[in-house]
Length: 306
Image (cartoon, rainbow, N blue to C red; front, top):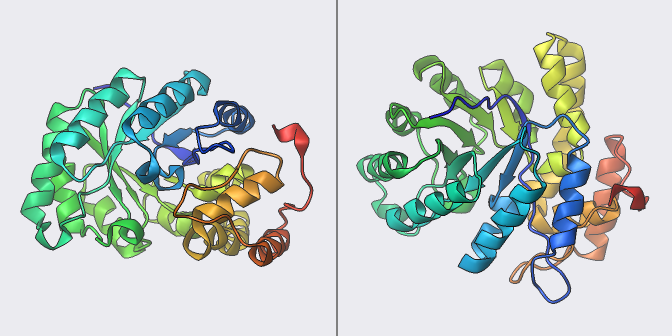
């Protein structure tokens, strides 16, 4: 397997839909062009912010084709391939690899979560890693799966030579520290939220995957760069400023807020797919205020961003 550097910031790109509910190819291209201006390490496609759960099979493959077309060859394309059966996860991972994915990001199967013992989960991840032509990353997302993978389970999975890292959105920094202490040094740890990026870096994370990086990529990159330079004052100041904006587009209002913020910036956000509703007007006003307090202006529609 190729050695992949997972250092840096990765935005999990939203899937844009047009007025008819189809994937908006031009909107996707424009958003990726905009993000390409920044020193991002790569992109996550078909993540939670990409509404992967709302896409059918044909849309999934079409989105991957279009994304790879517009992602520069020197930027990684990490693809969410987790499904509730091992077979379907393996199949989608194969398809993603064929369409140019550099790595697969795999959620644990969670529909029968009461039966998802450590033995079952370890076997699932190992089976996917055995079959995959590309490196595999574990995706711990308790907010969506209702499961929080413990350190012991992750460490057992991490022993597989084709499992190269984890994106952890749980926010348990002590667990990240335990993973860094006991996993092989080559096993990459990515913070799954900008709200705890600096704390994660301080215990050994290599980077992060953030919804916030779609609309405020430079501040997220600046936190990483300041940490790399041991400039703790700058890193801490930036981290504190990003907490509320990050919460607004994740746990508070989620994908609808992320897409609304992109629209305000002059990017292509559009509506989320049902059953998600667009962000309500009163929340849009509050969203603008939250970002303004952090020094990020969403009120002006920057058409030059498209």
